[in-house]
Length: 557
Image 1 (cartoon, rainbow, N blue to C red):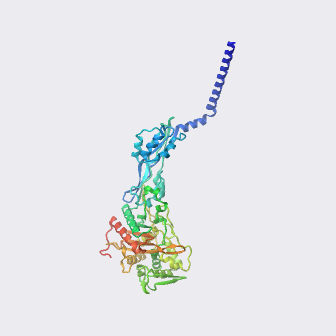
Image 2: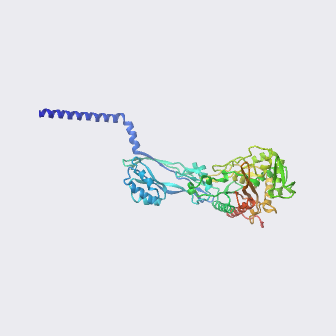
Image 3: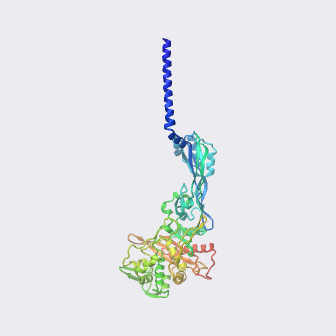
């Protein structure tokens, strides 16, 4: 009986063993024959990893070789939660050394479903080294490049900025992103069960981005920003713009906007404050626009600088009565005096001789309503009159009912100073080894008309009664024009909000610089000759000294 029971148990055990063996054999056949390809791919994904090797971003230099945007070495700290043995200790240590929030980090480090968690991106290498010295399980480090702007706010609106992944977001960082970014590399590695690299299968070398040299002069730029900042503060204004341009080449030596910001802390600044207003924003130019009508009439042979008109202090154009900026008796004024004293009535009288078609032609010829093509993102084309009514010929010639950018207006004065040839403004002098190749200049007016305009614009600063005497620069001849424009407001014009501006050329005899200054909504005074002209003088004088331009006048008012 006992023997029979033992035999039965042996047979049962043997049957169970055969059953288990058969199941194991079937599972092995299934895995090795049917699922072999899928499992091979899964194992490969678990053991082989491709790591991206970021390319170094190119440096941006000013015209003298001073760096404006650079890549600084930084360290990124990350962790594999499956390998972190003491998440609370790691979170507290990271908070002490790197300044991260331990309450946010601890839940991430405790989540064993994760294989990768950033502890901190692009932190100071010394602080990261302090954390690394603690030898915390599961915490790893790798070097990265952090975009930095060593001169902080200098040219911040022009340079723009790049994000945490070194992608250009605004300004030249954005428009030149392809050239600056280079091409990333990669490395395919084999890892063991603990995630440690044990072999390198292949490597693709990264290609660093190309360096860029600008036409900007960081010293002239910094000084222009300082003067603009002081002028805005003293006038209790909303903001301002300053541009310094080489009329012979179109090279932009400075492009300042106030208020400014620190490009290293761009995320803390409202987007509206980060705009490069010299190219993105438009304004009604006021009397600085009068050069268009006067130059056009000279070019068409309608007037000469000595042509005289008997002018009242008001004029009726269609259903509007337009007055001078200040009351005066009826008098005869030459074209030269009309420019020097910024006569609204004289300018409109000349524009009426041009007519609507003629004025439109010359507005287009000077480049208004078209982007200049400057090599920075976000440029506006300006705003031309939507339609022409009977009174438009009284508004547009004196800079109302038309909106321009600061760069458009500076480029027009540069064309007048450059013998009548318009040059495209540009900020980039060289990308890598490739120099900027200027496009052929475009003739706008003849050399004769250019000389006539320059002589009359000198009268704005030199002549008795000129509106721009505060723009004078000791030792140099200056040619320029003031502008005071009421801002549009609810279908009309404001009686309290103005843009005050001055655009000038120095030295007037042999032009080297065009400088534009515009102040938005000054409160202490509204006149361009009072608010903007003194800023022009300071910016121009410093630029001439930096460029070592010899004085061209023995005495000057």
